[in-house]
Length: 618
Image (cartoon, rainbow, N blue to C red; front, side):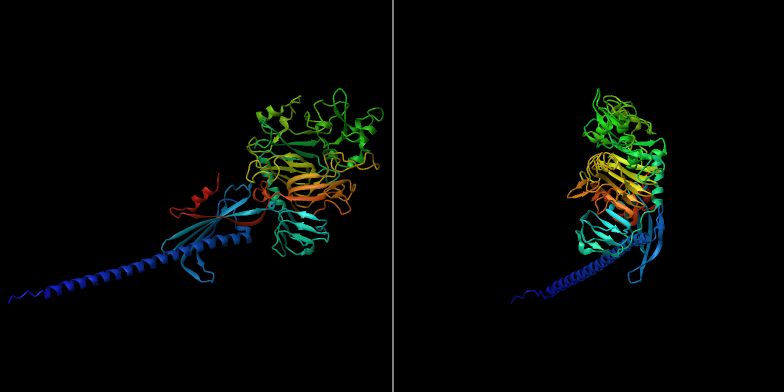
């Protein structure tokens, strides 16, 4: 019998090898799992550490912003301040965050002149014991007072009533009162005290009481603007003379000029102003056409500011004082009949009828030939270099086709006046009117008098707030902003004390498209005097019609513009929302820094001094 070889030892050897391989595989898997677990733990620890550093950095930005709003002295005028220098950081519960240090830097960034607002940055560097870093930058900006449709420090005894319509944000540091006749508020209403009569108000965006007060801007805010006006050759020396608060020896007339012949005046270089001054301070009444001259001079027949169009060899305008007392051209007929009666502000070339004739280029609208001077005053020439574009468009002497005022047009734009900073600074009182184009703040050390309509070339809201065509005017007075009681806007009788009141100027009411800031009040001269129910304002009647204001009113103490008895104006205020994001140049800010953009900074090779220079354009 044959025997087969015994194979069991060999099979046992293979089994051993397999077992060993399985054991090794399991060990490898276990080791891999251990490594994976260890790696995951490390990754989790890293992310946790990174999250801690980021949280500490973010908290540092908010902490310095809060400190700044509590103590503005820590904010430097230029460059940056070191607020924290490698300090220990604490958690919310007061415990130390181990192995973490923080450095914080604060200062102005962006265009630091303040022309477009006040902007700053906080840069926070956080580092741990292993050398890991996180760097963050938080932008901050100071809200402009132009953001308010209405702001007062003191409300006084004046109330919201008679269906007042207020659009946009409203804030008062004083108590607000709403009369039973009611008022509607389309924006948020905030009082640092209380609001009485809330049941009489319609609040479209709610209201807040007992809010934190906001400090009203000081005269220091205005004084700083003189430097900007001087730099831009738009600083004007006037006087404080005038027998009434709405009289002035200086007036500014805004003018828009079509330089390129495209049929509009919306181009960046087409905004100008002209400046007129009287030869004697005793003639301040003439500049604004103040109503006191009406009685002081002996009635309309003695007026310098008013007249009548006559037809002859040329159609021309003749002031009333130069009409004869009898005959076909007698004063009584010129004053009481016809539709070509009109009053103008002092310096208007149409009033230059000092004897019996006037340049035939003049028309009733007063846009005829330019006369540099008259017997009562003169226009100031632009102290800078006159652009050939202006000379070509307007000419330097009157003609049939050119006005002739090229040398007297002050460019209020940086295209033709490269040094212009957006500020017109007046030492003394100034009267303003005209058609405005650009972005300008008029600052005056005394009253600013609104002598007639101020309208923008571009209708508010018609273009983007960031558009160069968007017009934005600020009126910033160290005292009052006053709507004049003058012969243009206040209906008067044809003869002293007799007849029905007649409007002798432009259409009923007055248009003001500007953001007004008065260190005292925004008010109407003689608001409680004059005729009643002579002009209409919607369904209402008053002595002078509607006071249309598109922009905002910021005043220390609320001033009156009319009475419930029907004198003065009826308020028709609307809000220019662009003032919040594109305020007038150098307009005062509230002092409160709000949260802006947020940036992550690459820590590789970071140097705070070098980085800061990149944030501040030179």
